[in-house]
Image 1 (cartoon, helix red, strand yellow):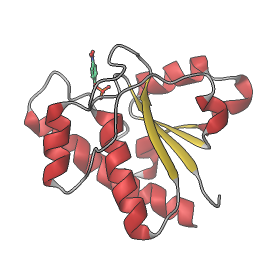
Image 2 (spheres, helix red, strand yellow):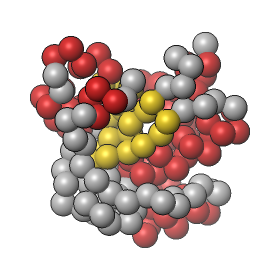
Image 3 (tube, helix red, strand yellow):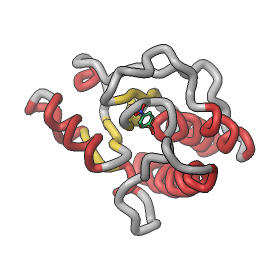
Length: 153
Ligand code: 4NP
């Protein structure tokens, strides 16, 4: 894939997938990987909102930028537009599979399948404390490294 188009997806598009977008953008640049990187939510309640302040604070401390990000829902054209659609948890995955045209379901993957942590899902940190956001970052950093290596093979 010369310039892969990647879409990171969670439920609200304010915590996990914006963090994945920010982390992956930073790591892809450092690795010299040219990619289109975006994020979206399976739910549209937060359309137009900035990423959650707790996600921005935790990510900002590790040097990631959330500049220019606002929340939005997955739309039908995304299934044609993107090469890989990366779900943060099993519910996101099954919601995406249910919405995708049958010809495009192969693009949908669990993001942590590319990681080495042994965990399967990025847990929703929305109703928890700051530790949850740090754990989200740890998982996303690890899976981003794995996905970059996969795309550079
Ligand atoms: P996210 O977290 O899916 O990682 O963006 C959530 C954000 C908002 C809600 C749920 C999860 N919510 O119910 O509003």
